[in-house]
Every structure is written in structure tokens, then in C-alpha cells.
Image (cartoon, rainbow, N blue to C red; front, top):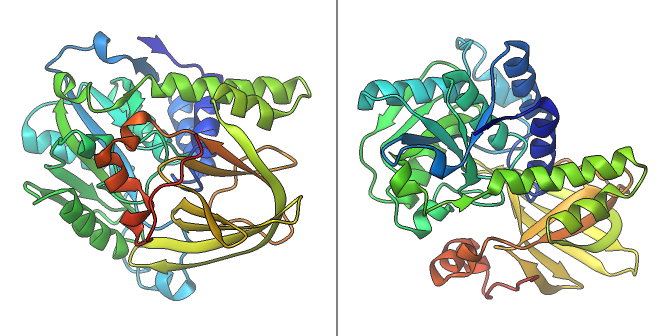
Length: 362
């Protein structure tokens, strides 16, 4: 186990946002959570699975919802409701502990993202337990069923949820992860498109084989390479891609990004003209899922399609791209678990209604 420094945390979250495939939550909001942790003098401890007992209870906290901004009409619906002071993922974790009668010994991150990676760290530090050196996706994903837990058949229930108004619930049983997605998403829709979740409650002995081990180390390696290059006046994009075993696919200019909030997701399209005047079209549901080149399917999930600002190297999350913005489209390999038949069934393009198989970038 080791205590993470603020620099290491910042590097982890920066890389998590780059590798978040356009989703995974706001880096700015994640940094605010870390500001709070460090200002309170709390420690962020990173632990490997072989450093905790086999019977240690581990949970997975995260935020679920759309990533598009609310309209004034939507905001008005909630104006008379109270707002909780505590973070709602922390509330969900505490209610789960009360329900099962046992304290958590650590927490897993469920996806890469400036928001959700930070949320897992925040809940862990608040509870005084480690954040585990792993992830349950190795990218950001739009649905609850899209996890390495599901690939390995780990039950998602019980599931605790809480929103910012103080509403709480625990699902003691759910038919499967798809039903969990439907139920939790419905609650997010009536909770300003954001609800805190804690699920996949199990022992370290069960979970250790169902997650991507070393994921936090990987993020820190990518973020450190970006940071070191930037400070030395070198290209941070090239540095982080090399560190993450990815590649720069294209440089280009954003023509347009359109989106709508549909059933609790931010669904949209990004159009980019490359330096060679090829036309890229990226479809996203919170996260980037499919990319076409000149109208032909080009690359798809489960591999990672990521976009950064070409001038600063910083990630740009959906749906925040602006016309004429100079960007770089980066590709990173998914974890091998996603290339198994079950992984492709869950996160391949057919899972999102497209009539073609995955087109792997690696």
C-alpha cells in the first residue's frame, strides 16, 4: 500500500479523463473532490488486491446519468427540493454498510473518467479505506451492464442509490445487470440526471479476478508522461500515447457536435475534418462508441476513441467540442477481456444497434 501524493492523484485523473472516451465525468468536478480531500488532511491510499484479506468487503461507487447540461425548465423542477451536504455516493456507501451490517475495507473504480475515478477515490478517502489498484472497465462506459464484473458473472446486487435531495433506495435483488441499468437510469432521470450508486458488493477474493488489476498504476504512468512532457516543453499528446500503448490516429478540426438527452443518456454526433480532408463522424452515447471515415465504419468500441485539444493536449469531454476547435483523435487498446465473446456482446457496436462487428484499432 502507498499514500498517493497530490501530483500523483492529478496525473491519475488527467489520464482517466483522456482515456474516458469522451465520458466518465468532469475533470474539474473530480479535482474539486480532491481539493476537499486534501484540504481536510485525509489520505488517499492505493492498495493492490494481494495487500488486503480475501474476505475484505469491497464496493464500487460511481455516478450514473447523462453528461449534457440541464435546461432552465429542467432545473426549475427541482427548485423546491432540499440539497444534501454530503456527497451522494458517500451516502449510498453508508446506507449499504447499514444494510449489510459490515464496513467496507476498500473501493473499486468502475470506469476511467475525471469524475467517476475521482468519486471512487473520494468515497475511499472519506471512509478511511484504500482505493484499489484496479478498474472494472479500463475506459468509460455508458451502461451499468458494461463491466468486467458482468463478463465474469459477478452479481450486481445489492445496489444502493442516493441523490442530492436525500432520496435513497437499496435494491436487494435485480434480475440481471440490464435490469439494474433500467432501474438506476430511471432514478437518475428524475434526479437531475445524476445519482450516486454503490454496487457489486463482494469480497476481495471474489472480485480480484473480475477486474483489471494495476489500472491505477497504468493511469498514473500515462498522466505522468503527459505531465513530464508538458513541463519539459515537449509534446504531451505523443508522450501519453506512447506511455499508454496507444497511437495518434488523426489531427483535425471540429466541424460540428450535436447532441440530445435521451432516456438519461447524452447521445450525439461529432464531425471532424482531418488534416488530409477526410471526414470523421463519431457517434457517442455519453462515450465515443463508433467512428466512421468518409462514411465507412472505421474504428469502434470496445477499443478506446479519445479526443484531446491539439494545442493544449488536454482532454475534451462530450458534449463540449466547439466548431473550428483543433483536436487530436487518439486510439488506445481495450483490455483483452473486452475482446472475449462476452465482452464483444456487451460492448461491441451491435450492442448499440449497429449492424456490424467491432473494428479493432489494435
